[in-house]
Length: 126
Ligand SMILES: [Zn+2]
Image 1 (cartoon, rainbow, N blue to C red):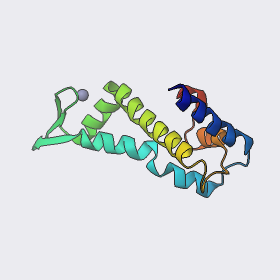
Image 2 (cartoon, rainbow, N blue to C red):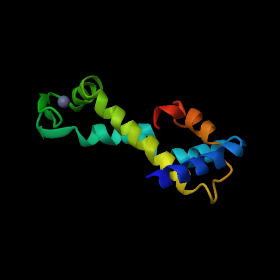
Image 3 (tube, rainbow, N blue to C red):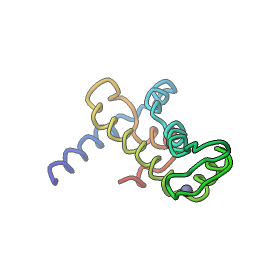
């Protein structure tokens, strides 16, 4: 684990030395699996149709008259699940950054990525 941490720190350090900002295209490429898409998928997969005017939220077993009510319910009552989904996306992006740090996207600026694409401070995920 210590080795892993040291390795990780080295990779991060490499990023920090290369301070060229990301281009818009680079941001887009990296944001492919972005938060909004994954949150949307999560809501869709947790909106189950039981029959005419009967919709279910499997997370809590509550029933609703339409999918739009399930969506509102998930956004209001299962916000912590949505936060988890977002965190997954962030970790995935961080993973990609580390994995690809020696290859094609080596010139990107990690901090720019986290502030522009992910819109959150780097320190919140480590
Ligand atoms: Zn629910």
